[in-house]
Image (cartoon, rainbow, N blue to C red; front, top):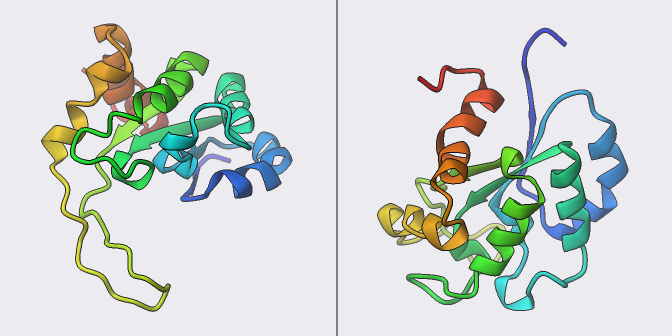
Length: 156
């Protein structure tokens, strides 16, 4: 295990649920991208969200709070995303990391479609953090300390 690897998944909640036992058993960190594609408008009681919360709470998974545009259909400020982000942060702020999802790959109508990049304002994305947690210490964890721990670099 001396390689300091982690597993990163771009997986929807249904796949997280299907793999929860395997994800809990792996001997390395697991990172789940894009809020596990929870749907903001379905709220915190949607099917499978409890499993994601449990994985984060137990410390078995990091959740990347990235690409709010993947979970919300209300750009540019995604007003329905805070309850999802807040629930995850409250479950375990030490297992949250932020990401921009740059270069914002587009989404075609089918898997074979090539789509232009999704138009996203990274500044507007990171400006969502104060809506997700008002605590600057937790924001520092999400932006600096947790990534430093996960990826093995200094958070000077």
